[in-house]
Length: 194
Image (cartoon, rainbow, N blue to C red):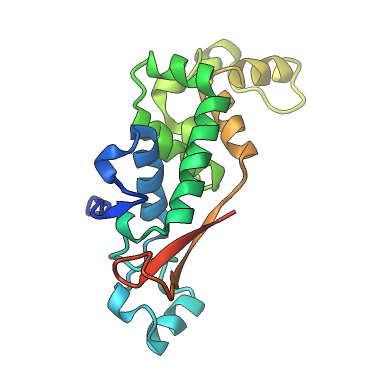
């Protein structure tokens, strides 16, 4: 499978990609990765493409060549505020994670993946795992005498704590749109929806 490389060209709110915090870069990269379709911007509004999207054959809500510079300023600000709010709410947990060689960009990606239920995220990072509960408790089943003790130990690691904070932020969506003003150099852009 080819590596996804986000289009980081352009400016939004007078900021270039390199001006963004690593956490925000990771978050926006994951947003683009999980929402990119197989349809280019030049074909996005054709009837054939719209039909592919309606029928679920396009796999994403953004053209395959949409990137950072296509993000509407208001949408960028909303995404950036979500990143700042998460980093504030999970500050102590993130500091512990970063001390264990967990990467800030990966934390941003994991915030996007986890809050939107992509089946990957904080719970999949070895750096965030706590003590090996399987060795201590075996494989208890619900109702076993040690089940609650196992759950308490398992849920006390950084991965589960960060996962819980991210899920409390709720899901967000992106949508590709045409704008009548010049807020996007292409005349198109995408909207970040709460």
